[in-house]
Image (cartoon, rainbow, N blue to C red; front, top):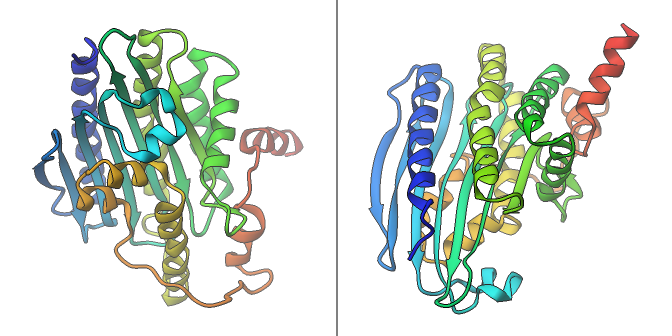
Amino acid sequence: MAHPRLDEVKTYLLDLQDRLCQALAEEDGGSGFVEESWQREEGGGGRSRVLVEGGVFEKGGVNFSHVFGEGLPPSATAARPELAGRSFHAVGVSWVLHPRNPHVPTSHGNVRFFIAEKPGEAPVWWFGGGFDLTPFYPVFEDAVHWHRVARDACAPFGDDVYPRYKAWCDEYFTLKHRDETRGVGGLFFDDLNEGGFEACFAFQRAVGDAFLEAYLPIVKRRRDTPYGERERQFQLYRRGRYVEFNLVWDRGTLFGLQSGGRTESILMSMPPLARWDYGWTPEPQSPEALLYDHYLHPRDWLSEAETHAKET
């Protein structure tokens, strides 16, 4: 028997998917998202919504899934031995936006709920999620805006929440084999069950509801910035890092593939085009070097913004 509040979480997630798709499609101005419903043979299914060759987004996806079954994949039970022998439900919404203009950052987010049960034992459950920003030609004010929205979403839940989940995001979205972060971070949380179900669910909703406020103002500011082939090729090169992270380090990708999830939906997060160059380095003092020198490592964006404001 699933957690009695599972349906409540599922209702919120389906509504979030609707709201994200509506707002993103309006901003894009193209033909919108195409929906495909799917079923998982072992139990569950979902609805995938993908936007291709839009006015702003070269590719975007907002996916809902609810999968369940009697056994968990090795990637789950190795990290959490107490999950062995339990049935499970995993429900969530994940999204990724790959804009065409290199001056508009790529962005990703997800919110999810997991529960594993075994007769005669208390259920094991938690919430997880977050959102992160991956600029190619970064702008300081955009990173500050992104993190201010993230901080404000966390504020009702305690002064320590934003710093903790901001640091976790920086750590999680690091390409260890490159010794660089994927972007400028944001929020990441997992295994959240402290304080009871109601408080955890409220926090998940706060994070999910904050994404559009964090992302759309940046898109509006940068979508019409002129660019040329140099910027486009650098964007494709940096998209290669996005692919590397998702295939090498992302736990959600591994769990989805090992649990028999729908491959097309799991790999929806991949950019439509990417490239790799051997041994490439940016020209000193170039805009590309700015990204490498100042944006691909953790920074305290909000403290830096406050310092800058005082100095000016």
